[in-house]
Image (cartoon, rainbow, N blue to C red; front, side):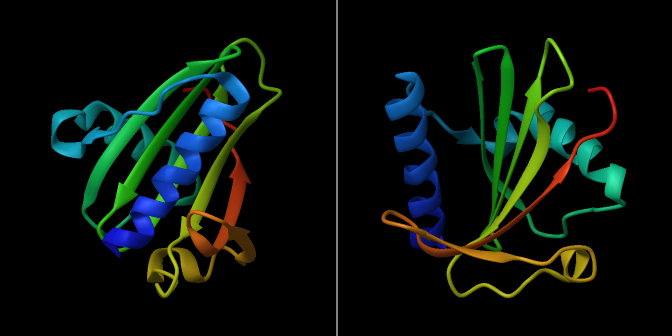
Length: 134
């Protein structure tokens, strides 16, 4: 799923550049285990433990929000948007790369809508609202 994940990363990078004039830089997950752990804690709200190996992570702060991203070897991409000032915008987005099956740990918990992206192709996605404090 390397090409599909590249498309997902490129799509996120274009969004941040176009809407916030920010560069999007990813890091190997093993160099930023703190970001993998942060997302893992949030996912535990829904009793989700991702089985796939995390490959790359990123984090940006924009307009009072912390955006944390993780890309997994299975083709899964997860991001958390967390408003630092209020609980107005706090959610986790889950995206499945083109051609990947829904991971077992997510299959019974979410329905996935189809979205089209020029850079990532047809992506299936879902989300949930973050209730805890992180």
